[in-house]
Length: 368
View 1 (cartoon, helix red, strand yellow):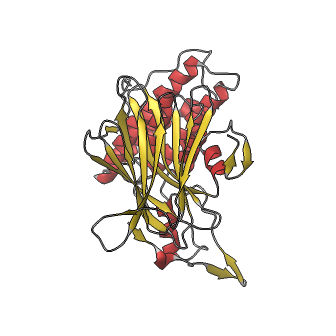
View 2 (tube, rainbow, N blue to C red; view 1 turned 60 degrees about the vertical axis):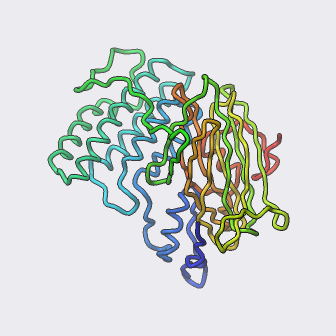
View 3 (cartoon, rainbow, N blue to C red; view 1 turned 45 degrees about the horizontal axis):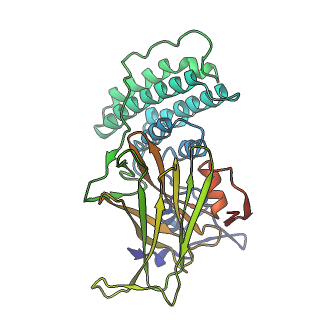
């Protein structure tokens, strides 16, 4: 955990005016990297696939859960932040995944369609398989394999490219050239009585198995420097679409000090979230420090799993809120992902993750 004070105030002057980027929806680590550059006139350096990530999140309330998990797993194969991307991976993230989503949305405008869901999942499983072939070829600098995968995608998705709809009423679509078998949720399990470490850009997702078929309860502990003002909260959504909120704030004077044995005093902001009947959850925090804060959120489960999520609280006007993690209940368990995205307020964050059936008193306060 460390302060990022060296990057504060890195703004560019244009024509006598202070100009700053709108970082809404960026990950906190992307923001810190951009602020270190200090030049908002230069093209931003963001991880490839960020546009389709936002699209998947914006549809996450209406997509089949497996489609959300598969879609985000595909985007996880993008190169690390700042690294070059091959044309094959660029087309996969920028064309083929969005086309599959567009076709599914067009096919379900009049209501859910089981055939459309099955076709979407078939396409995403295929893309997931191809994404890993491309990722391996990129790592091995295998240009021939990249060309083969790019050609395969062009041919396989040529029909979708000509049409913006899934063929749910016509003839059965041609089978892919290789078998596409049902897959388990593409995550690694949380270590029982051990630790998992999640970063928004490196191994960001973990599976928390269900205990006796029931939704787990989570305890969120946000580690903070003593005196740092913050609020931590959770938004949960049931299968019916009903949402619930819980939020807790630090108190500057009365917050208990954690005895760490180190010179710097630490306090904890702790929140318990019950997911017994929930389908989705967002864990978030407001930061009110004068400098961006790189910190860690600890999530523990009743089975003894400990999950550490690297996160950034910007504490900047206009980007006060960080979505620390999203959780999605699947038959295999809770898929917990380090999001690390920054937003101006809670209403914007909920809308970005497709939690829209909420009445608001103001941008930070729902009616509850």
